[in-house]
Structures are given as C-alpha cells and as structure tokens.
Image (cartoon, rainbow, N blue to C red; front, top):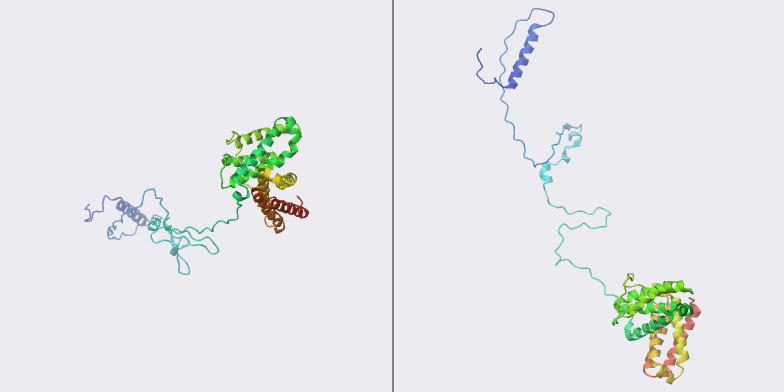
Length: 369
C-alpha cells in the first residue's frame, strides 16, 4: 500500500481519526437485519489541516494562582457580561494595575470632618507649628505673699511642735486634736514651696512632704497607742524630708495638686483664728510690735498666704465675688501688717489687724464652713 504524499502517519491524532472513520464505514456498510450492503462509494481522502502554532504562554510572576476562565455572556440589553458581572468593570490589564505602586491621595467622605491625609507630608522645616497663646499670668506672687525664708521658718515651727506632740503616746493623747490643723498648714506650705520661685533644701521633695502631711490630716485620730502608731511612720518620714533627704518607702506623689486636695477649709480657718488671736493678744502696743517683730512678720505672711490659697480652684469660691470681696482685702491687710512691722509703725499695723478682723467677721456672717 502506497503512503500518501503528505506525512500524517505516525501522529496519534490522525491515527485516531482513521480508526474512527473505518469503524463508521463498517457500520454503514454492514447495516442492520442482514440486508445486502450498499455499494461503497469512494470518498476522497480528507486533506490534513496544519494547526497554527500555539501562542507562547504569558510570563507571570511566581507563586501566582491560576484563575478559572470566565464565561462571556450577552445580556438582553446588549451589555457584555462575564459570569454575570458587567464586562466594563474588569481592568483591561489587571496585572499591570496590581503592580502599580503609586499611592493615591484619600478623599474625605461626605459628612466626614476629618481632612484627607496628604500623601507626601511637607518636610519638618516647612511645617508650621500652631501658635500657642501666652500663658495667663494669674498665678500667685508667692515671693511677695510669703518669702521663702519666712516659709521655711514656719515649717520649722511646725516641725518642732510635731516633735513635742509625738514624743510618746502620752504627749500624743494630750495634743492629738490640734494635729490636723498644723499638718494641714504644713501641707499647704509644702504645696506653696513647690510653686515658689526661690529654693530651699527640701523643695525637691516638697510634694512628698505635702502628701504625707495631708495623709495625717485625713485620718480620724483618736486617743491611744493604736492611733499613735498609725501616724508615727509618716511623721518620721516627714522629719527626714525636712532634713533634706528622701526616706525609703515613701509613696510616689504627683508634682502638683490643688490645695483643696491636701488642706481642708476648716483646718485653714482654724489656723487663721490662731494667728489673728495671737496678734491681737500679744501685739497691743509699739513696744510689743518691736519685741515680737519677727514673729509678727511670719504670722502676717501666713495669713496672707492662706487668704490666697482659699481663693484657688477647688474650694468653691474662685468665681464668688462675695467671698473674694473678703479674702482679697484680708490678704492686702496682712501684707500691710508685714510692712508696718518692718517699719515699727504700730498705728499702721493696728489698722491692718482691724481690717483682717473685719474681713473675717463679715465673711463668717455670710459663709459657714
């Protein structure tokens, strides 16, 4: 048998085609029911079709997943669809889109008050800082109200008093009722020291002295060894701080606290009463003013300081013009007594003391602690 001129033999595809053709021809020629086979007609041999060379597969990055082929459909309205999704939503070249690393500036959505973040922030040298308003100058002039040497002397007086009170359970039992007045005063002075422009040896630890003193004031003190022992350790720690050191085991303290958190109005009023009564009883003439000059100056400065403290935030009178109308004149009158004592001017001192009494009396008639 002669082979055709074209060389299709030896190829599986064409072998299969010839086999199928022979089988089909046999079935046609044989027929059904044993009838005579129809004469065979000569069919021209099929012309082989040379397949077009396949296009090379596209180059893709490694570790990419193959995606199923999407079936293209046509909707009744003429829109071209792929798996039920409109054709125009697909990117023409998704790999190129995915590889685009260019950032896009976000757009604020309607109703969103947050501005869109710029893609490339300006260099630090070009950024403008927000203008901050100047701090209000409403702080207390502690240097004038109570100079640091006077404050330190008052602290030493309280220390000496506490030392006598805490000598034993017996001395504690006879003086425990007055302790909160002086520990509250000490807490106030320590708070002032932390804000004062001048320095003192224990100023760096003033916040600890403030809180330890306030802790004793806040306790419900009673007679007996149990109550004495409860405040003995804080008292000893306070002594170490006033000596210029920080004892071990002291709880941490905030740098700044409102005065109202460390000293009650009632205890400060009691200290005002002690000072004003002492001045009234012990400084009744010019000679007494000269002999008690240093003590007068200290007590008058303390009155001025307390008068300022009780007008600060937390006591409830910072915006009360009626209360301020008594506290502010009291502060001025106290400083008037200071200057009069320095000048040995008893009449001026007496005027200042009278103003203090007037302010206290009128205030107490309107405000009750």
